[in-house]
View (tube, rainbow, N blue to C red):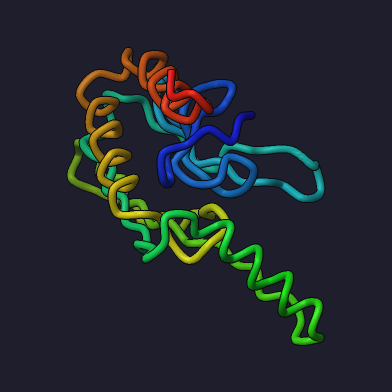
Length: 158
């Protein structure tokens, strides 16, 4: 899996992940949506729930907004200082809440694991919401969106 992402929307080997693809997250593929979690005993990701795109009416994502452009870096530095001074580790991640709204009118609220830090920059979240909207409009755009995120995270921006 890759660490290329736009806020809480991450590129992974088999699609896009909402949340941290190494922990509890939603996996978006051309086939549908899967709620995945890390099974510690089996040491692998397992699907908790799956929905075909025809069943999904909307995905409503809410995550905290950071006041810094690099919240993960600041969280790591704060944790390192706390650990070095004997205060213990304070490394935390931003929770990502997703409401999966189904076409039958039901919905399910999922609290997913986010990335390290207290939140996500507002501009990155706006871009992630726009990219998610494109996926919801046409899931066949997932490969293109993966490339857009990967290119925007490249060191030279290409």
